[in-house]
Amino acid sequence: MADKTILIADDDKAIRTVLSRALGRAGYDVRLASNAATLWRWVANGEGDIVISDVMMPDENGLDMLIRIKKIRPELPVIIMSAQNTLMTAVKAAERGAYEYLPKPFDLDELMMVIEKGLSPKHKASISTDIQDEEEMPLIGRSPAMQDVYRVMARLMNTDLTVMITGETGTGKELVAKALHDFGKRRNAPFVAINMAAIPKELIESELFGHEKGSFTGAISKTIGRFEQAKGGTLFLDEIGDMPMEAQTRLLRVLQEGEYISVGGNEAIKVDVRIIAATHRNLKTLIAQGLFREDLYYRLNVVPINLPPLRDRIDDIADLVRHFFNNYAEENNQPPKLMDGEAIEFIKDYNWPGNIRELENLVQRLSALYGEEVISLENVSNELSTQSTIDPQSPLDKENIIVDETLQQSIYRHLKKYFDAHPGDDLPSNGLYTRILNELEIPLIELSLRATRGNQIKAAELLGLNRNTLRKKIKELEIQIIKDRF
Image 1 (cartoon, helix red, strand yellow):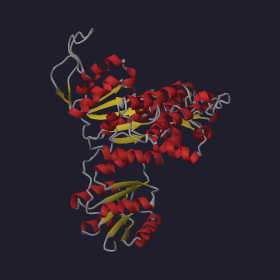
Image 2: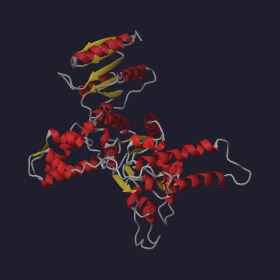
Image 3: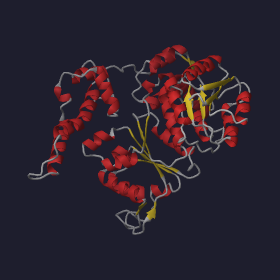
Image 4: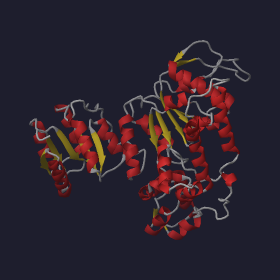
């Protein structure tokens, strides 16, 4: 790589030194600049094979310079670095043509891989479409856990790819769906949300696809469905795991054929929406239990986004608290309150089973009930239950917590499914034992975690597994940790 030149611009001398040494050892020719003007001169002169630039520099914002770079050298890969680790930074970097966005602090090995890909002849520059600076921040948080989410979202903004958002209740799944719409290419068309858990199953097809007058009892007039309401825009299917099997079958057919017929109708209507689905449930478990169609899962799970629970992003709590205090103050024409450091540290130790929604409720309660300008530890402890540990009376030693009716039904259903599909002497293919165990592993681990209120150490002991083995399985099987016990 000695013939490849990397141009680096960052006003932090330590960052320049670290990058220069690491990239120099890798065989690259490295040129360093402490300001945007020097970098711009090199780029304008046709120098460099790839650029690494900070956002905040003394003479110009790196994102603004990125626009100018892409105008004169659209094929030059530009890697943007920033300590301003927000969704908008990631979105603007992608929208303005950055090859990659890396939040600080970043991993050097990851940077090396990005550079190698950027220098590959197969790399493609991003499409640049400007975004307004004054757009309101849709998501709050700068933690490493959220950076992964932001980077995926930024790459999805200008696509029509179907997205599946997973995460515990209260983690902000609809906010992510709305942000993907509001900053995407369908932003000028409707965003329509429908919650599958809130609609009677016999009405879901009518809600989705509309119905004709007289098509069923009570259908006194023609009604358009959510697909037609969202025409040209985004249809958000919330709590997709609660969709009845009959509706799943029809939705799958719509996704496959790109058209649908309203209930009682006879004319095909073309589908022109982007689909974003969300669930707090583990769809693989539902598939194993015969409650969710596997083929529909793969149609919806084109790009997965898993939202971290609040307990995994405690560094964001102070920013979230400030945001919720400001929102309440603005809505109620009051000066915003603050929370003192002791109180912030106290709530960081709380488990937050209700996630961000629970935190927002707490802040609203504190805003309404306390007249103090600065909320103290005493105020917070008065309002917040700290009972986030396992109930000492929980009968963890009883085997029927795990081998309950749900699991027994699951075992029977799986065995019956295999043998019903192969009647008589036409037996299933070899390896049935391993396949059945693999399918039962998910509900077994989920039920163990529920029995221990999400405590992985206790669950590992209960299952007789090494805790690292359990953690690995939770990650590999995409198991959602539920803290409510049965």
